[in-house]
Length: 113
Length: 111
Image (cartoon, rainbow over all chains, first blue to last red; front, side, top):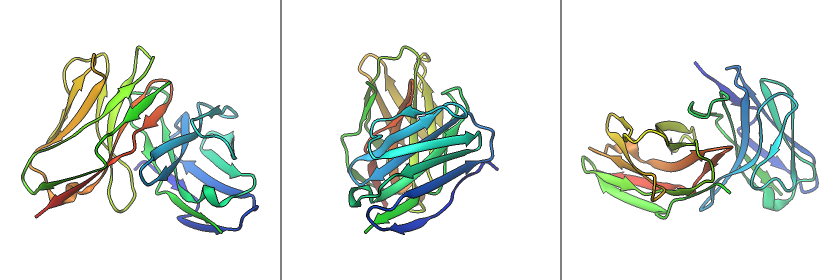
């Protein structure tokens, strides 16, 4: 069974904290993605990666950074969390070819207080 | 730029009836792929159906089928014989140089 695992299902952090959201996939996929999901806005792409140590900005990268030191792990970093980053965060992975489906983690609901 | 637009925030349908969800997209890529994903209350995203843009034939998966109009950049999803388990948020997505999603349509199937 394919699996994308996000480290936390729910997370509460304080404003100004550095936050790490971890995502691990066990399918040897080249591509990994981070999205945030907000009501009425759907899934918006934050960052994606085509390979180890490679990263590309998505549509809303401001306030975020990412790290991909190993193929199976893709981390999303909030350098200084703010209340407007309260959201659902979804990680996904896929093979390099775009005609294969993306597999998603179960999501992390982050609340910044 | 790559964009996906879903203009129906919410829809409802009676059990066993047919419903169509709309999606339009824009991309500058010549080779791209289109998808419909389902997100039930469990939050787990599930692929419903995919379409390669170079294929003229519309994709079908059991009760799910698409109407792909390439010139109009339209990609609608038809669900036949709707079931209570189809109640979910449905997302349209396109994959050219990145995987981009629309805002989603909440579908409620009523008994």
